Length: 88
Image (cartoon, rainbow, N blue to C red; front, top):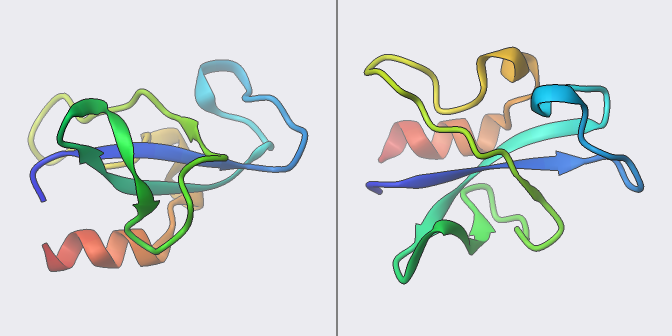
């Protein structure tokens, strides 16, 4: 998978905190980018969840070796998405 879109699974009825960080973020997920619209995710995350209710993190690593998720959300990354990324 060449390009991923980083998505935030939010607590129901909660707004995103400052700079995408806050208690409202339950998990950070990864989805493949839509081939026709690379800024948009495909319909399902790499762990099999529907991307429709998720918030776009608008995050991408800027240098090699940086994590696929926003570093401030290290403790909230989805272990199943991370495992799927390692397999690709």
